[in-house]
Image (cartoon, rainbow, N blue to C red; front, side):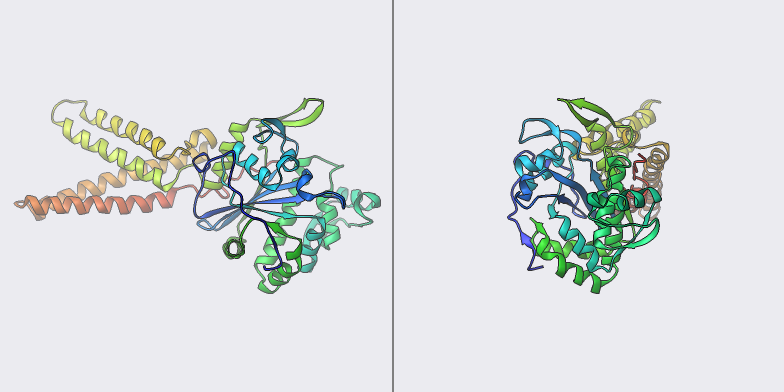
Length: 413
């Protein structure tokens, strides 16, 4: 790792920590592929590839999200909208990071920059990667030697060399940029699986490719990231932004671009990385309902609507408190389908029922054991509430969405 080119970590200019969704168990690294000519600075060119690699060590999953180059977004440094890949030429690699953070609300922990030469070294160090090549893809590369550097491909499951893998990832004439980025993620998945499951190949790959890598991550951060990714490599998911149903082709200032619904894409990306409802929110909802039960007990003896008002106050207070304490809380109905909504409902009911059973059972047992001691009765009730906290924590952990397969929004274009 000593041969890697380390950049100084720069502070964000256009976003603050409170603007971004973060989780200590999730590390997000932006992989930038640049195509700088010999007389150009890589940081002054438009980024050819932008892929966010999210390593979720809590749920042992890796998520690969490609950002299409022609996506029309607001670039803070320019103070107006432009193609996403223009962020690099305007303000360098850090500007791409901040532009994605600004538009999509996800914290990015650092960037790793590669070029074509490094990509070839990476694949060759692993002894090649296996990719299923279609007949159409093979013909495109083989029949255009000038375009792809005299590379030939055969249809079928092939072990590709670095030159062949690069040509495969650069195919763009036969379909859309959505499919081009999908090919890039396919190769990246193959690289990760092969490297992270074989420590000898990983070392060789890291040693050979290090001089070509530029990053603002420290040596310790890189080592920690590789260690965490090794536990997640069996569970890789991929997609691209914009998501299905959130974009249209448009012509702006004479340029063909992809016009997106930024809010919808932001919600879907956050759900994919962090899930629709956190353990904290589950506990908040449970305790809002618990306080509703207290209202229920206080009013039940006074008028018939006590039960209804107790539950209503509990539910409303839980929702409001959850929103205030977790600004990034997203209700399932906004970002998911009926299946996910049903799971959220089961999770909600699970916390409610467990609270009722444990509290009522614990209080009744305390009354039986300590009928004449107010102090012991109070202690027993207190211990019951501690048990409620513990049980609901594990229930929420059981039902909370993991943001992996269930939350994957794969594009089909």
